[in-house]
Amino acid sequence: MSGTHAHTVPYVAETHYPAEPAPVSTTGPIAWLRENLFSSWLNAAITLICLAFILWIVPGILDWAVFKSVWHAKSLSECREIIVQTYGEGTTGACWAVIHERLGQLLYGFYPVDQRWRPDVTLLLLITAMIPLLFQTMRPLVVVMAALIGVKILIAAYLAVTENTLGSLFGPTTIVAIVIGGLAYFFGDTHHRTRWLVFTIVFPILAYFLLWGGIILEPIPSSRFGGFLLTMVIGVTGIAGSLPLGILLALGRQSKLPILRLICVTFIEFIRGVPLITLLFVASTLLNYFLPPGTNFDLILRVLIMVTLFASAYMAEVIRGGLAALPKGQYEASDTLGLTYWQGMRLIILPQALKISIPGIVNTFIGLFKDTTLVAVIGLLDPLGLTNPIRSDANWNGIVWELYGFIAFLFFVCCWGMSRYSMYLETRLRAADRR
Image 1 (cartoon, rainbow, N blue to C red):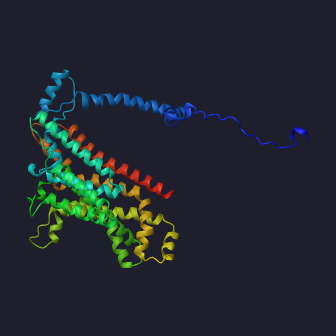
Image 2 (cartoon, rainbow, N blue to C red):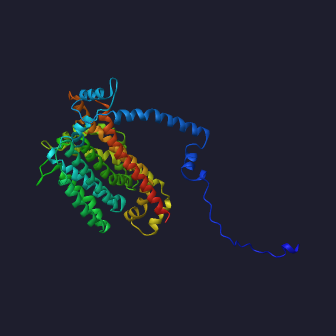
Image 3 (cartoon, one colour):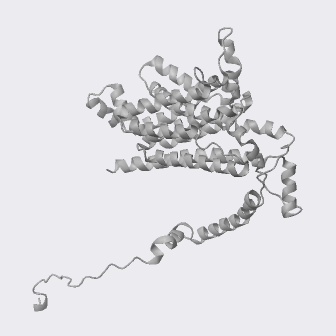
């Protein structure tokens, strides 16, 4: 062996060189475009075709819906006259004046105008009850309350400009928003069980009391409910009631008690085998035949019960899938720790099963929320049901796209919000697993 390599000499760097930035083609927007849109010739061709389609259709939609639209008119014919006078013959544009004219009816139905502050406060109660439970923090509540008060200020300013009125800046809704925000902060820092009791029991009771009234508030019959208010009442009640009932049905279907299992299986299979519209007809007509003579069972209450039962059957199957996905060792671990059946379910089994079932649960919620439009067939005027009396008005006869587009936008915002929260919750739970 030569003298040069007789001894091993370690190499020690004597000069520090700063790290070089990564190539532009591997980071930033250019890398994202290359990886997601132009990773191959086929993907590049599909991307260019989609871009060409967007460039072809979006300008026309914006032209119709925004640039050549009319917001202030008393009838559809007046809208068309304004468009022709402004942009010339053969021009078409959206007549959003019908939304401006009937916005209160689409949102509140036939709820008395002087009592519409009560649904507004109920919405604030709903937001205040949901945010601490969904996000485990009060920070989003501050943002939402500030946004609602900001919207209230904008509405008041709009009324002051367009109708020469001062609006209702510091009306009951704004004042109650501040009070509710303070109560939420007070109870948000209390023990978890106290917070759960306040936000899931006390607040809903107050909300239903505000909507229907009684005692110190003017009673509002259910026949006055309609529009998006009716959709929210049915959807939120069905969503809130179907989850716990679905969990009980899923556990009952897996029970070792034959009679209990038979009852749960029969209920689930019967409900899943019958269309929701059939159950709504049963709620509106046939249910009274099974009640004592002279019994006045509110129609909306019957619909709430039927919708909740219908959604709970589908929820039970979603949760049963989550329970079946857990390995048998989780059940054995619960027994090994000496936990009772309900302790094991609450502490070990159900948290994992519900986490697995999150996409299916949210999908059921979204489907239930959209199915609330079926109540129009039994005479309840949700936003979709209100389109017929609005279009039957001689002033708005023939208007279609604007009404359905606005209703679709409302449903899209709610369903998109539920979908985004589902993604947020899945990400948060995955991060918790990595700790």
